[in-house]
Length: 381
Ligand code: MG
Image 1 (spheres, rainbow, N blue to C red):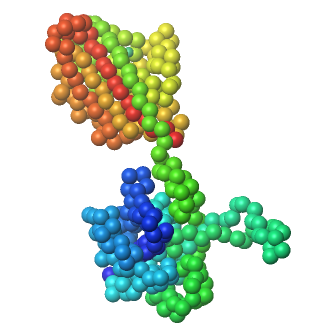
Image 2: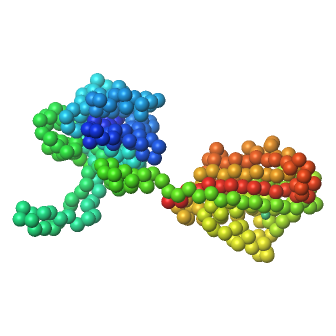
């Protein structure tokens, strides 16, 4: 096989007796914690194979959460984390990887950048470990019950994935199989491997308590969901084209307005401003301001999208309905979706544009003008 293998350690039993499922099988943001950890590695082209070590009794749970992923068959863990890692390494021996990243399933939020740093550092060292400096002041309770402050200079917190050249870490695990070491770096230290430190990440937290679980959900962006709506109408006037949803359409008439009179983009701009409670388009771009005469309405929509981003928000989706008898909208819908997606900086799959007539009724039915409705959904942290 060669290349780099990932070894995910998920053998922990947690508080099983009479309790809920082991934590690595709990759902975090709609997905099992273990599946999140696996997917972080399985999706990478520079990871040749993923080996998961699971608890003896977890086979059915595991097949459920790992469905559809291309993984090596799981192996059963041992009594301790160290034994579980050894079992996983032994299973990988048959595939002869050059290096292995050993990762705790309880760290489902590991970033692609962090995995990349570990892999890169293995070019020059036999081991690579993400470390974070200790920021809190450390206190130790002495045997007499009094407290003392421990100097934190040089102290670091170790995370996973910890990366190793394959042969030496297998050898280290066999050599120290009787000892109980808390992480694989400890074995690498004892074995005398060269170790590179790479920057860890606070978001790569290890989920051990309920508080960790809630924090992880927050980090996943379990923020607030907001919606906003917008409506706009413009009157037909002399002309030979109309602008609708950012697309120029040849037509026997034009639309009257201070800007390019794009009712679709105006309604959508108001929907986005509405979702974040930021007023309306007229407030930000007063029609009496000569500066906006003939302006491209993409400017207004870009502005609203920027306000969302400045609030660290994200646009989930938007939906625009154009209301008119003519021009025919359907042939232009793909171009409109693409243009709106481009202006907002989101995937076209998140943009919907549709049209309706009013069966000849009302001002749109009489062909006096074009109206548009829009709704937008935004998440805020
Ligand atoms: Mg308007």
